[in-house]
View (tube, rainbow, N blue to C red):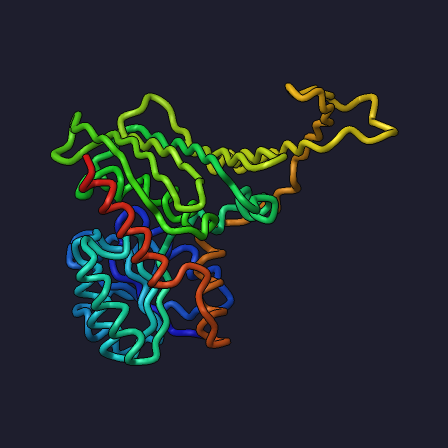
Length: 319
């Protein structure tokens, strides 16, 4: 088992504590949180040791799980990597690209691994549909959330939209040629709602909307490609695949048939992939352990986190 320590036990940090206690790959050594009152409450509630200093915890661990506000990611990651610890770091990887580069360079020079918490890569609805998304040419993503002061230390692009940015970059293997975006401050000092249009060199276009002032929650993406449409609902963990094929000689009488402007008849098939129930956070942490134990590239490595942040920053810069 890998000895692991958690930095930051706010809302998400507490979830990580619970999950790490369930994992067969990790031995939870304890946590560090600078808020002593919160640390005492969490230590008592989860029966988990609270450490008095960051270095004291780091020196006991093989892996450091960084679940602090983004502002502190770089500082903790550098300290962990400097003491021969692998790092799991929540998204966004850092508050700027310079800090992200420094983390990547140190990890590489010390032969250590890092994974970024882009948890939607492990969403069971996405996993069930991913193999069918082969060459998307138009993508539409909506990520809407009710207002919560937690996360408002960064713009909504870094708080919410970056999840969809990472998903799209993992699927579209083509350089970005242009980005047009707009963002509006409503409650926070940084934009609370944003829309971005990303154009790729291969012709793919992605339209992303993120809001943290919605009356309802939505986390849904739709992928359009030749002869197929795939819908992934990250919130309800459901997906639907619509495939369009040439009308066969012996067509299915129950299938929907369409005729295009050239007179070609197409048959439409509907599929609902089997969704295997899973906890995405547990899956991403276990996946990282597997990468460390087998010395293989993490599913969402530090470079993926860097590219997502770079794209997010381009969106913010184009407001």
